[in-house]
Amino acid sequence: MSLLLSSSPQHKMSYEEGIMGGDKYRASLHLEGPTVEWRMGKPPNYEAVNKLFEEGRTKVWPKGSVEEQVQNIVKSLQMEFAYKTTPQDFKNINLHNFIASINGRTVSCEEALKLGSFNTFLKNPLPEEFHYFKPQEETSESTHNDFKTCFPRGFAWEVIEVYSPPPLIAYKFRHWGFFEGPYKSHSPTGEMVEFFGMGILKVDSSWKAEEGHVFFDPAELFGGLLKGKKTADSSASACPLFDQLK
Image (cartoon, rainbow, N blue to C red; front, side, top):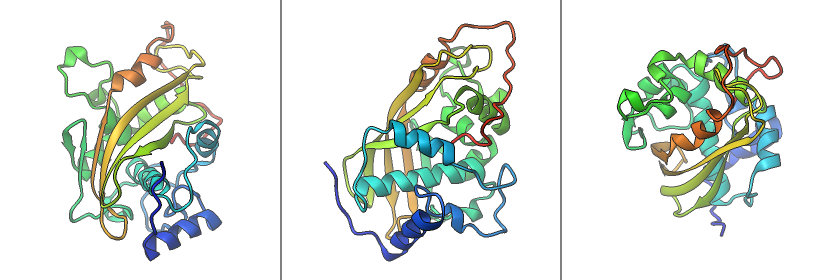
């Protein structure tokens, strides 16, 4: 069931400009000023992953629905945490009030920017002997390159259900990609790897995020990646066909 909601004037204007002149799922991306500091030295290009998203999504939400707006703001937040280097450049969060947690672990903007979005997202609170992913041994760039390599078509994300309207939004999501390149010492299987999770997003009247909480099981992701046959060479070169992984 889709929940229809009138957008605030500010959010509606940005969304329509995004459709007309930039990334249609991340309206603020093409409105960024020249002083923004990008992790890769330039704004990301989401053309490849947008194609994967449109070909593989399970829901197409009506324009103006809560589901569409939640999907777009979370994509914009993912973009900012993955590619911007300073919180002051963020357009989609309320810096004065923002709180975030992943599987119950509180995360500051500074920590997320230091570790990188993948490392922050996949950090495991279990004892070290149970870690199949060790962010302390990775950099933002190394993890980015690993995922860019194993998912050469990108790593897509969609909202599949919204349970409550703003300002406190509860939603369910799906994340997926095709394991078509090596992941560290594991050969690609060519299979789709996906996982599901829940999120809670609190927004203000301008649809800026004040709180973001995400819950998921990382084993769903790594179960698909670690099933690939192990090779003698544990290094993985980045795929030259795509400049960015989303």
